[in-house]
Length: 119
Image 1 (cartoon, one colour):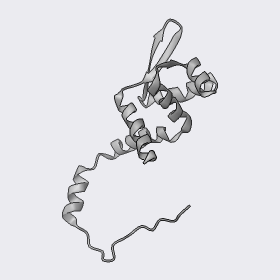
Image 2 (cartoon, rainbow, N blue to C red):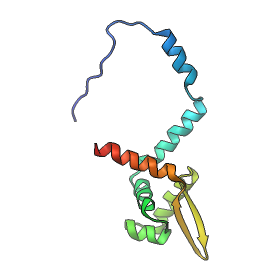
Image 3 (tube, one colour):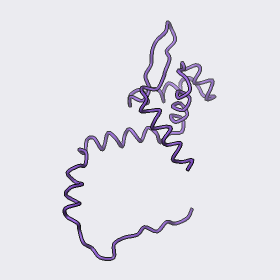
Image 4 (spheres, one colour):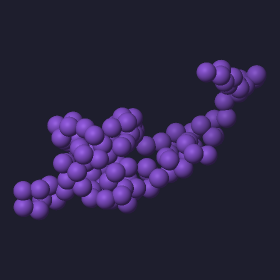
């Protein structure tokens, strides 16, 4: 892997006005922790696969397992986490539970991530 050099200031001088302005706009620590947890969910390939499948269509656990060549148990485990983080939602139709993306924001996040890595 190529080593990337990070540039730094040759002269140390703090721009107090800029620092104070930015500090006043930073979200609360609790919000930052929640945001980090939100993005952490995207750090698992299986969860990303599930989200990509659900971008295409609402599916039940059986269909997700078949599509991703995984066990229903493994899919359910990941869906639980995705649901807990409010990335997916579900609806029941008789004995079948269908999963879909929670809202358009999730589609946007996944699509923008894909666009970024394809640049």
